Length: 126
Image (cartoon, rainbow, N blue to C red; front, side, top):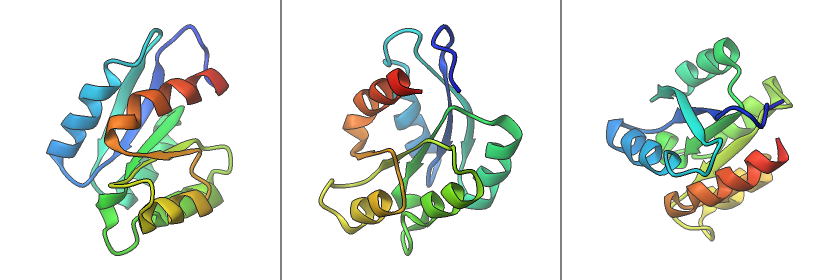
């Protein structure tokens, strides 16, 4: 459960450093109390380890991380940690990756440009 007096703790699962930088730049503009990136991960296995070690409030998954199965991580995390909260960043809200992320339980699905609004909305609910 997130304490509304502190920044939302976010774990990023992204394909590369450039994607991590882009996501973190957007997350810096989340309104107070804001969002703090607690870990940047480039593989699903590292993200799972970091999730259970750090217990972030939110996981941001860039679906390009696993191009062959873009939303697999959502389903895996939801099975292993049913209370987890996942935002899936997809190229298009009408893409196969978006449909897969929704069907596997992502709380919010949208483009990188939607990340601030998706995070803000979820912060109110957490």
